[in-house]
Length: 284
Image (cartoon, rainbow, N blue to C red; front, side):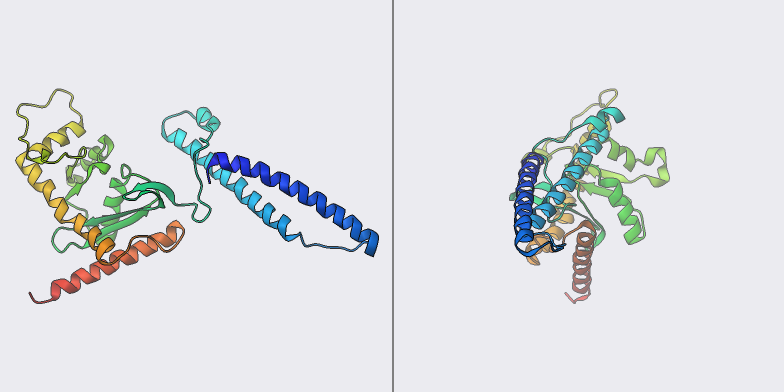
């Protein structure tokens, strides 16, 4: 339900509750007149249903208002400005699974979670996985490296990732702020490539003075080595998601709530790894 619709529905339900209370009072007075005064603690069903919905809508409005303030703070607004920020009437809340978000998928906009997976290139095993409610991947590179370390027991030497993970902040993180022992070699697309663009020769000459890390990464991927390394990505992570979605038919989560969805995704990834290990032990 959108924030604007909530405001309309809250007003409508408040009026309906008022009308029902007036009807209930009139009926109570009539029954008292006919049968004497009796105590009745149960609310009429219609009134109870509307008051329950009204309470849920009030809570949902508070959540959306808090999200708007948090978003404003994340965008750099000061505390006073963030506190005064109001939601847009189109901002939405899902009553079935409030922790999920509206995201753009292959079939249009859906209520969803963002499932993450890191895959090693030899056996195509998933070495790190997580679930987030963030609609894009810009803030997911560092959490995924941490997930790989925690779940596989080692820090990756290198990472291939699509343009959704590309940002100055992420590229600085891969260089570990000048700590050579923590550096991760990154090959991250800086934008969506047009058909045949990867075949273009690398531009010659030094980078302009003050080139950003994103510009440096773009030049890196234009080199012969960079193109060859990044091209391997389509043979590593893409087949894994294809096997999970197409071969095994896992197209949507069956559970609700982020914690339950995280458990469901962990089981899916575990199943994938078991099948990959089984296949690796079979004779050719």
